[in-house]
Amino acid sequence: MKIFFKTYGCQMNVHDTEVMKGLLVNSGHTIVTELKTADLVVINTCAVRGKSENKVYSLIGRLKKGGYKVGITGCVAQAMSNKLKNYDVEFIIGTRAITSIIKAVEGTKKIDLEDHICEVNATTPALRRQKKHAWVNIIAGCDKFCTYCIVPYTRGRELSRPLEDIVDEVKSLASQGYNQVTFLGQNVDSYGKDMDNTSLAKLLEISQRIEGIERFWFLTSYPSDVTTKLIDTVAKYPKLSKNFHIPAQSGSNRILKKMNRRYSRSEYLELVNEIRSKVEGSTIGGDIIVGFPTETDEDFEETLSLVKAARYIRLNVAPYSPRFGTVASKFYPDDVPYEVKKIRIAKLASLQHDIEKSLNEKSVGQEVEIMIEGNSAGRSYGRTIDNRMVFVNDKIPEGEILKVRLTAFKSGTLYGQIRKVSVFAK
Ligand code: SF4
Image (cartoon, rainbow, N blue to C red):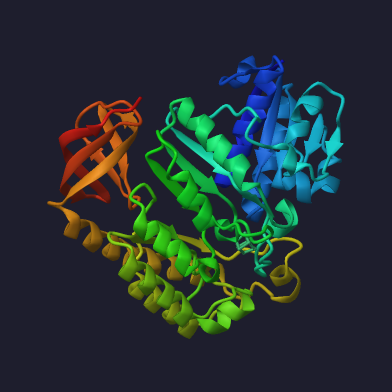
């Protein structure tokens, strides 16, 4: 069968699509990149916001009008299966049942919302989007239950993959020519908590010894789960990314409590300081939710001051929107007007723009190493170990590591001049 995938949402979803594609290709099916050539369309869905969920229903409608067969996977499939049953879809496959995709496509499984995520292991095929950079899920689910978040309901409770299995996958990726790996989890620092003597720090320490893989990334960190051991490990080994993505979500202790985030503003900023003081050349990324129920101007001022102190290299800002089934949607009226949310988003964007400008302008003149991730309009772009994208005026193959002198920061983009090719990709 010829199958077209449409994927929404986070990196976990993107990687689930890679695994489903790999399983299908292994069973003799074909993945197509042109919709009009498809026999079936799989929509791998995201439910993190109402907007992303609604996109799924309208896409189903348009595809059905065009005469396509449609199958649904991902977070909307898991959380909204009752609603989806009213739509004319071929199958509904939940987030932890992705190995059922073959049966679903072949018509022998209509609905699977069970948990057999442990069937995904180092031997599971994956059709990866990039040739040199592979994403590897190391932990499924989340136990944190932040009051605004639907993830614990759509992706279930935390379950870590066996360390040996992950290491086997990384070794296999190295033998296939990959030289960059990102370890993924909704809360990646929880990795190993459900096992004996296992942690993200230990996994990174063992993995960085694997020959052929030059860089390791890990996403996304939960502030109070980032351990001193993890920070020390990152500081010690040059192959480990010096960027920590640690969503604060708010700078107000009152709002953090209402969100059920398990840290205070001062604990968060202490963590940022610990990372900065121990990990040379580190950068911090963050996420903020604006307009959480009852957020006052004073609460928002606290968020602005936290952002000033954290000095993020990158910041994602989203307006609060209630998600069906969460504690916040049940008990906290969405009482901050959208106009107010928009003003607060604009203030944060302007502050962040200034911070990024000053951090990046300061780095002009420095020599850094970048790993090439792609080409566009005759130029190549690559990432520094602290997660900044740099453009160079030459066409270089993906995966090569270059020494570059940063020459300018213009309109939000860093530019560099190649000094030397330090490592050639295999
Ligand atoms: S840590 Fe909170 S925001 Fe992140 S996935 Fe878990 S519940 Fe959602």
